[in-house]
Length: 49
Image 1 (cartoon, rainbow, N blue to C red):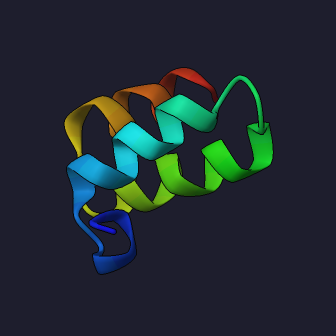
Image 2: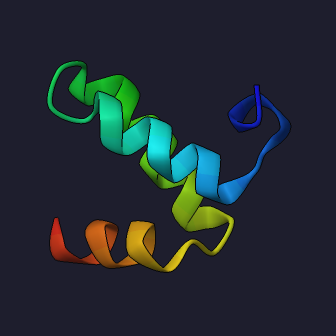
């Protein structure tokens, strides 16, 4: 799976899909995507502060 390989778009998409149903898992992938520089994940992370 692309998310397992660290693809920032895949990490964001997976995190976004899980965010409402499995919050902790979704947040984990969102943070990883933000760490890798995904702009929407960074925006989401910064808005949650």
